[in-house]
Image: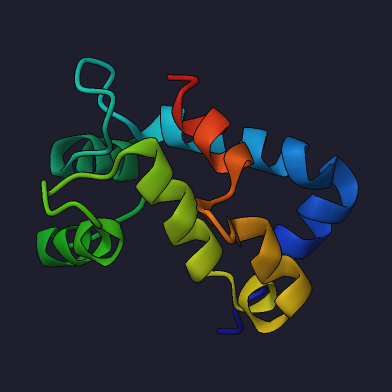
Length: 117
């Protein structure tokens, strides 16, 4: 099976701001609406709804991969950063890496995304 990275074509189509907006929409689809986070339970439930058979240990690994603050769940910022990190095409080019961070840290566009919950 070959992995095809659609993020670069999405950025070309929607622009950087539209792409971030789509990532934020994806986060909202997966999150626990009461906690505002992607939790083990919300991820497991959504995988089931999507017809994906994912083992519990795989779900835990998915969460651990992106959990930067150690709370066992993903907030919107962690989710967006993880999506960028997992995109080989975005991470290969220095031009695209500049959309992720600035000299001051996280790109303001991601900050705006994070505050829109």
